[in-house]
Length: 282
Ligand code: AMP
Image 1 (cartoon, rainbow, N blue to C red):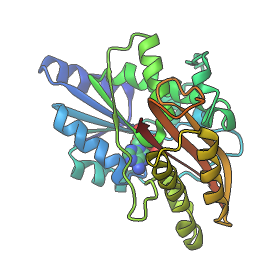
Image 2 (tube, rainbow, N blue to C red):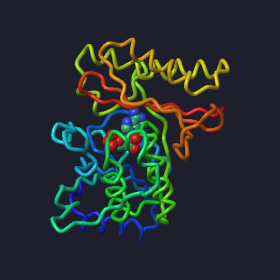
Image 3 (spheres, rainbow, N blue to C red):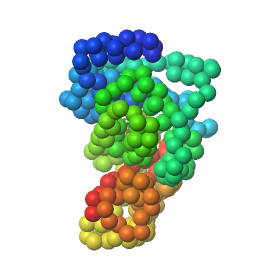
């Protein structure tokens, strides 16, 4: 497995792969990998000849006062895990490599899709995401790019950007990988103290309760939101940021639970902001 730090070296490898007729699968990450990331890499390995994994804690998608500085980082640990999952190349550029001083172009979706859910509580976040993913797509030129459904809004935003800007890449959403108690795996789970870690199970528990009620026939999104809210409030260490029940493709609010829906939430457990969601087809 190769570890590359510059765009120039990455392009040399991409050109080689293209000459050989190899298909390229790409998994963009911010590192500190867990089984969720590894599931994306393994899937990319099954579906492509060459798998490239980027590790880059992207400063432009963090807001002021967010956890850019404290975000966990360990390239040696990540490299071992990527190799064991079947990755072929790790692309781990510096901040200056990705954002040279003269850099002043950003990619921003104008529509509402980036303004709701996480976009409302993290202004500028998706502009950072669409900018870095554009740059990485331009460097790696993958046939397929793999994203986790855990970040459902990110998937919807990237799919919109790929359509709008005619990127020649197939976006493959992959299911959320969870801990035994249902907590969605996340690099940020490492921030949780012991009592917070047990409290964090309330996110998936409340989503599962909502799913149960919908399966029993409840179709009113307000009632479902209330059920989730009460569930989360029963956990004293938690503080709700948002609970949204929306159309899974457009992320627009819905008045009745039907079709392809997404129930998404963001909750603070102590100082750590966690997100989770479930997708349902009714
Ligand atoms: P991150 O390093 O958090 O930016 O995540 C990199 C990619 O891994 C994104 O596409 C995430 O959606 C995906 N991912 C993160 N956590 C999980 C998980 N628990 N299950 C599946 N995919 C995940």
